[in-house]
Amino acid sequence: MKPKIHRGKLTASGFRFAIVASRWNDFLTSKLVDGAVEALEGLGAEEDSVEIFMVPGSFELPGAAKKLAETGSFDAIVALGVVIRGETPHFDLVAGEAAKGVANVTIQTGVPVMFGVVTADTVEQAINRCGVKAGNKGYEAAQAAVETANLYRSISTGREKEKPQGKAVPHVV
Image (cartoon, rainbow, N blue to C red; front, top):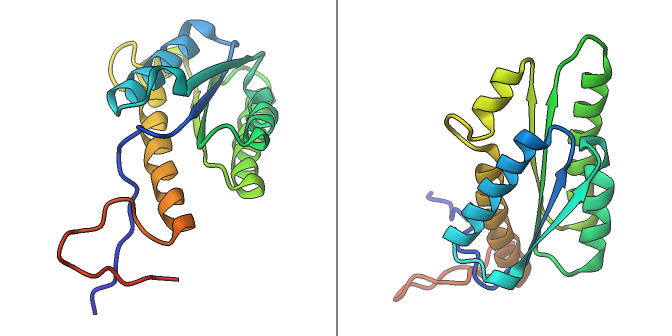
């Protein structure tokens, strides 16, 4: 038996995206936002299909994401922030609640919210994940948002946007 595999396409055309980003550690979160915007543009998002919302810190990301999801205006949301471990347990509380909150928004609203929050033990680790030196987690989160939005749309319509030519595609429930 060969099961049908469903995957979202990497095309942002026809979708609307919200980026909600923390102002805390802005010298790094701004790089995540830049990476997310670059990814969305590169995947074909129209100029007026991306909006950016700023919140004070990563702890506020889930609340803003939920408000945005409830508007019905966005197909996917990218939550971006940087939490760097300090000398107190504050890091664990903020990072853990941000992660749980973002996951809950997706479950409660049905709108995919990508967790693009960098959690690092040191500033150097955070820099390495924000695209200042190498990879950019904002870029990766935006790509995941596009793919997931496409997958959710294909699930909700019961078919994929582009069917292979010449083959009948069975409806999978």
